[in-house]
Amino acid sequence: MNPHRSTPGTRPTTRWRPPDWGEAEAFIRQFHAEQPDQPVPLTTRLRQIREHLEHTGTYRHTTAELEFGARVAWRNSSRCIGRLYWKSLRVLDRRTAVTADEIHGHLCDHLRLATNSGRIRPVISVFAPATPYRDAPRVWNSQLIRYAGYRALDGTPIGDQGQLGFTDAVRRLGWQAPGGWFDVLPLVIQTHGDKPQLYDVPRDLVLEVPLSHPNEPRFAALGLRWHAVPAISQMRLTIGGIDYPLAPFNGWYMGTEIGARNLVDPGRYHLLPLIAELLGLDTSSETTLWRDRALVELNVAVLHSFQAAGVKISDHHTESRRFLTHLAREKEQGRIVPADWSWIVPPVSGGLTPVYHRYYDEADLRPNFYLDEDARALGEGRCPVSRAP
Image (cartoon, rainbow, N blue to C red):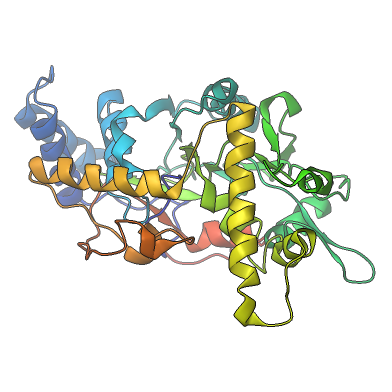
């Protein structure tokens, strides 16, 4: 259940772009409307921002504005089913961090706080935006924890095939790849004027769950596992016209993200044929529905394993009902809930969930999260080429 399902954007944002006054004004008015007890009156704050924009070309959010903006960005993320919890997001203001060492330390703190001994907490760490004089820092990784992907000499896939390009990139930067199925990739941190720096993710910060099945003892012998915290690190947080390219954030997993996507997609671990063979399913014809049966059992294993390990996770039926609760609460507040049906409906038994039989509002509300072309290139292990903003 990640707070990262949002409408992709396209503009590069490690470099500075002048904030739009209209967007800044709209956000500040929204902030004061929803959080009226502020020490600085609305008219005064608007005048301050206008003056800063005229004299410096930008402005700085207060800590309270930053916290509110980050939470509302989650509330507005049209591809996230878990937005019922948006108010619980813990916002860490890391805008003073300048060096790669400082940023790495804060990212480690993020993982420690979010993991919480398996009681996963929603957390976002917001680093400095770009200014007219300084590019914003960036993490190349798509998530703070990802597994490497390789190809053996005979072409056999090993690990996460979705990370092949990134794995090659960090190996060129000097990473000594172990070559296993679940090797945690290093972090690549780049700051203004510096080359990208490699940092290992400390092993004690990577909580992993070994996967087993409640009724099939041979399942555990496969040696499958998955990490507990889905911390997205390449989405641009946009608040009041200010872009924060480095703002990693996490919720907790919904089981289908692991059991119906990460371990199943042909471009990732592609495990359904292996699971079907383990279960002794007839794969000679699609009419046996062996894929469906294997998929359900794999998802059973994921939920069972996380629960047995005491690591927080949710199932798609429960989360679907909770999303309807979120819709009702937002309606009571007079707010629409933008939602992308193709992302809200779970990839397993979608027609059995209450979110399937509905239409949703489509809107690009801000604050929000976006995926940039720069971030997409970095996540694939490519340095983004210079482009005009």
